[in-house]
Image (cartoon, rainbow over all chains, first blue to last red; front, side, top):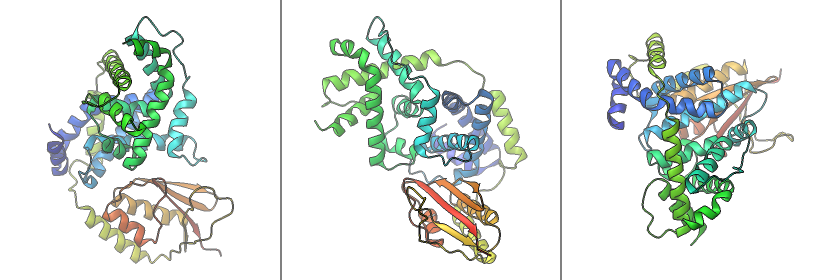
Length: 191
Length: 183
């Protein structure tokens, strides 16, 4: 089912909407669940958050204008749901966008790969895994670029930022990632 | 090559797209990273069963009648919301002065007759009609409504700001504080 077909079915309602939301759930639920779990949300709670995300997709899909990819619009809901989860945990604190990252960082052990491994592939995999543990949100956005072919504008829609701010965000992702890739530098130069 | 262009090449290669003028170091780094990400994805792709969760979702959607609800356009909802606001006749004042302990962007404050929480709920509902999900927190006698604000708000969202004489939200975050008129 293409994105447009899916949207059309969502808007038609009834069995068409059930079919479309089932398709979306099968495509994305695992990814959303993994995102919450990587942010140290307990599994059971993470499953509830996934449910909330899809309910919001149904409730709000009529407001989707089609000026971005539908999956980046859904990811904006996912990130919002995570921030709301953290806010509910600490209602006395005003949760900022940056706190999403801090919460993940605080919970994660920032591990630089001490042993670079036997070769380039192994070293970069370890470096990326450590980066993803420390910066789960950034890793997720990079994953969408790598796996789903997201453009900067698609990332901007998910982050709810301007294109300029998103370019800076992605540039910062690269800088942070470079720290983790440092032990692999020799392998990279020799490759 | 400017750093910004180099970053864009890096993003393109990471996404599996060509970047013919990219520096060789950039190509090596991004390609190695892409391979690592794909390898990690393959190794962590556990075949978990999503069907129970899907059935739970469909059950809830049916219970809440969200599968059959006809979708009206956002303009219709905005019209209802505007009419509701007028009918309530709530006096809303945006206070410009900033409290000395505020840091960051100024938070518009509404002073209302009646219950701030009730008004906050009205605002949240109104925001919902323009596609914005907001949340409410109470701090003492002040109620705060907060929501993520899109970088490029659409017409109905812009109209919401105009209607309430609100300044453009800063840093992608809409914040409104509501308190009751001093007795």
